[in-house]
Image (cartoon, rainbow, N blue to C red; front, side):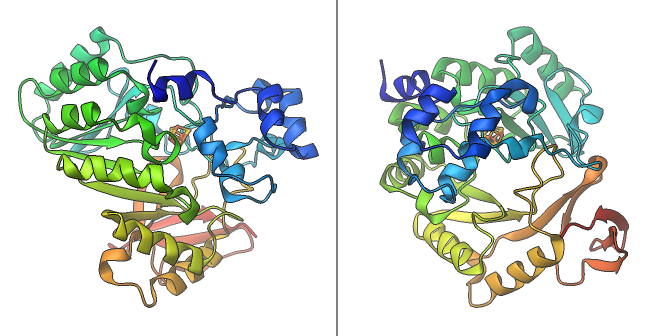
Length: 353
Ligand code: SF4
């Protein structure tokens, strides 16, 4: 059995395995008292990812993967599906929100279930891998939609699938016309042994393939991850990174600057820094918006253009992505902000403290 499948099989996924690794706090223990009822998102932590964490409850890796009863705190305006993806799903497993690209839910399975996940209505839902019938239906849909230039393979995490299944997905979806593939995956962060020479060679056969990952803290860019990134680069696969701003984890300009510099040194382009989405039970991770804007401003000072990601927020209710700038807030009440995008359109967004 390969190293990565062994890592998946031996994940920490219940109170006995997680407490064998970490000294749990009362809030963490309380989650397990009613696990699935507290949060639809299961627990799964690779031993590799756990090995990057210390035993401190404030450790940035631990906070991203060890659940807490705080996930039971659901605010009025938080949504199960905060980007309203179901509304933009013309056929099963496909999301078509923007004209030139589609997103395919390849599997619900992830190597690590990130506690801040916004797609918790699907990740870990036991939906399983996309079937041949679903893939063929998506391929037919693509034939009828010539304006689609880019196919995003997401989930769940597509790289938890075996190589032959990934090959089938790429072959089926690319069969009539060459399109750009983007693979959204946290595997380089949480299961870097999955990036084998064989996988990188397979992906390179379907070029152009771009990989977008999610490093949120410099400590995650460990030696194994750097090796994985080198493997991808040696096969000509460009890697971009989307960081989520997370309270108590990376909400500090110095941490973000270190992260972005390290990414560039590892050949990865910092692509987006996202405000946390309004997903149910994730308010303990979200940074209040005005603080986010200050952090962004401080972070970009002194960084080269190559190291600066775009600052963005996905509007609730499927309103789409807007770029954040210091001028984004045009009005505020005690409870709401009015945000303005580059075109001057206005949107309502909750004010959190
Ligand atoms: S890997 Fe992605 S889809 Fe899976 S839990 Fe993490 S953020 Fe969610």
